[in-house]
Image (cartoon, rainbow, N blue to C red; front, side):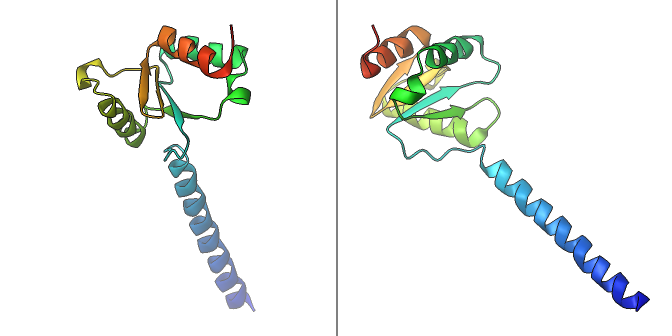
Length: 126
């Protein structure tokens, strides 16, 4: 009976580890955004200009008026690569790419003032 308990305990322990690894891998993947939306807001977590744009989005409830993805690029290489791809689609030189940045239906908006103007127009905010 003792041997059976040890076998069961071993199976449970291995199962717990496998489940933890699986959950961790899913959580890591959730940081990468493969966007299917027509508008993407690119930002850096510690970027002060991005925080201004995020505050504008929050204060004006833009996320309730416009469907878009928010994509963090400073800590995620896949997201940074997506930013470069979208900027290049707009003919923006790599040396000029930065955040905050919005890509929407093939057009690019770089910097808080341009992003705010775009969002105001898109959502009807005066």
